[in-house]
Length: 288
Figure 1 (cartoon, rainbow, N blue to C red):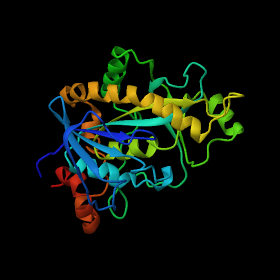
Figure 2: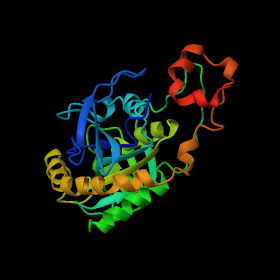
Figure 3: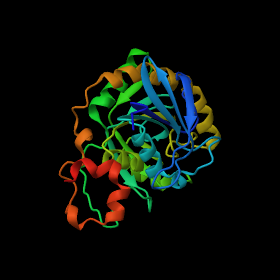
């Protein structure tokens, strides 16, 4: 199939469309893992074909643990997407990372409890390197573009991914702070893992909405998150619109593009045939 898009954008809470895309259309995609969060909108910006997917679905109908992340990543990969810029609302665990600030993190701690975070299993085994969970070169581009727009943006930091959907207890929030982590959210860990297995460059634009619940008098609430996300939305749209062409122009000379090289453990002849066929989009180029 001819690639239909090069760059993918995943929108989080409060970001349900990419306003900069022109001459677009929505398409429904079927994947071997079920349906994605909703239709994928494909359009063009600055001459680059781009695909947009709302993580939580139209009208925000999906809990973090209900999102079919495998289907979302597979859908974007099947369209020819090579890079994903994801946007997500986060809580801040540091005083200096204030609400309305942007952060481009470089590390993840996954504390979710039972989400499906691999394409593999059922007769095909792979162990993919994940020491650097975000694409460094791509994250640098997003950070530089945000700074050039005058958006207060921080580079680096650890995003801890909790199960949700409830927010943290105060003891949990203090535990995360004692560990030195900077941000807390509910979605990026699973996306980053599956994007890496799919050999996609993945970066997160974290939009700080609150101080979690560690800061007395500023405890998080859904209304606060939504209100701050709406305030951040214009800047997020500006950043995405400015970044797509720069992302597309960057050569994929990072490890993300070859993440499965040497990672497949199962001998080709020993692979479960049905599973291997199901994973053809990912593994065929590594099979004899």
